[in-house]
Length: 304
Image (cartoon, rainbow, N blue to C red; front, side, top):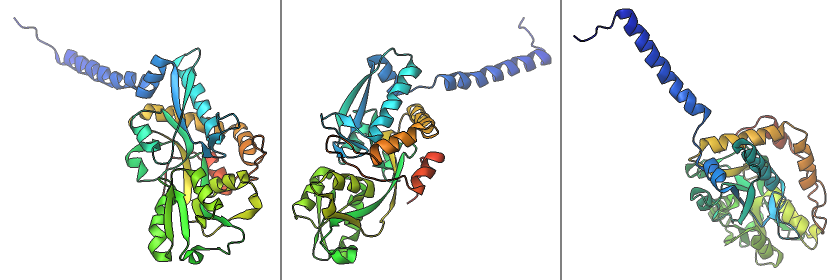
C-alpha cells in the first residue's frame, strides 16, 4: 500500500524544498564563478595590459618598465586577487597594448585587466566592461604656441592627427567635413605627437591629461599649448572582460577602497604634480572637481 502523506507533512516537505531551493543560489552567491580568478589561481599569474606612451596613466619608465597612475591601481587589484585567492605570491605579466588592439586583447582574454586611461563609452560597452572611473578628462587639442590656432575654425586646410582607435578618433572623423581639415591617424600617442612635433600635423586631438603628459616630455614644453573647446568629458577607467561580473566586482571594490583612503591623494601628487623620471617631467595638474567627485562617488555610469 502506498504511503499517505498528511497535509501537515506535505506542508513541511514543501517548506523544506523551498528552503533548499533558496539556499542553492545563496551558496553559489558565496562562491560565484569567475573565469579570470580561476585562471589566476591555476597559473599564479595575472596578465595586465599597459601603454608605452600614455603618461602619467600608463607608460614605460626610464628602464622600460610599466609605470603610472593606472598601473599603480592595477597592482593594487593584483594584490587584492592574491589575498582573495589565498596565494602566497602572484606573478604579474605585462603586455603592451595600443588604442587599436586593446579591446580585442580584453575580449580574447589576452589580458585580465587593461591598465590605461580607457574612456568608458556606450559603444565600447557592447564588447567590454569598465571599472568605476579612476579619472576624468576632457578631449581638446595640442598645437604649437606660435601656430595661431585657438579653435576648430582655425583648422581649415590644415592637418589634424589623433591616435587610431582612441576617443579623439571619433571626434576628428565627426568634425572633418564641418571644419575642412585633413585627418591622419597614428598608431599610438607617441607617433601622434611626433607628427605634430615635426610639422606634419598642426593639431593633435586627445584627452587633455595625455596631451599635458606628452607636452611635458617634449624637448621644449613651452612650444606647445592645449587649446579649443572641450569636445567631450571622458570617464577614464580600467577595461576588463564583459563576461566576468565577479572579477569586475573585485576590481571595483579595490578601486573604491583606494579612493576612500589617503593613498589616492598621494598617487595623484606623485603622478600629476611631481617630477617623473630622470627627465623630471611634471604635469603640474591638480585634481579637478570632476576627478574629486569620481573618487567620492565611484561609478561606472557613462553619459554621452
